[in-house]
Amino acid sequence: MADETYDPKRVEQLVAMLRELAQRIARLDAEGRLLDEVPALLKQLGDVRTELFRYEVRTTFDTPDVAEHRRIVDEAEPGWSPDDEQDTDEEDGWPQGNH
Image (cartoon, rainbow, N blue to C red):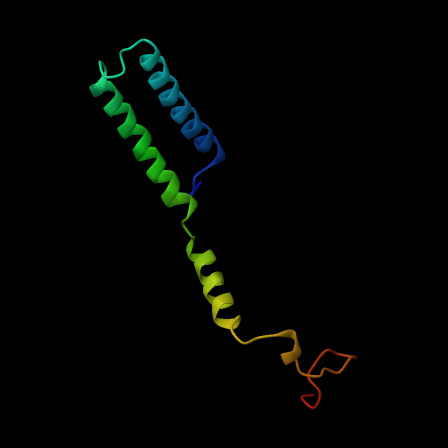
């Protein structure tokens, strides 16, 4: 898989990381030790933040092919409507008079 994409297995791992962090915070809070493990929490937060950034970048990334297709569609789209189609010869689909 290309490095520009974010595969489904990695998405599952990211969700697990987020849930683990949330559970850890809830557990420490329930035990009254939320601020006792600040260095460990900061490390875990940093790991989750890094992975969230990778997810954000890769899920919004357009491969060169997709970017080119999007450019072509964007250039062709303004001003076009189905009514702009020329009359065609029903037999071969070519515009009339261009045979």
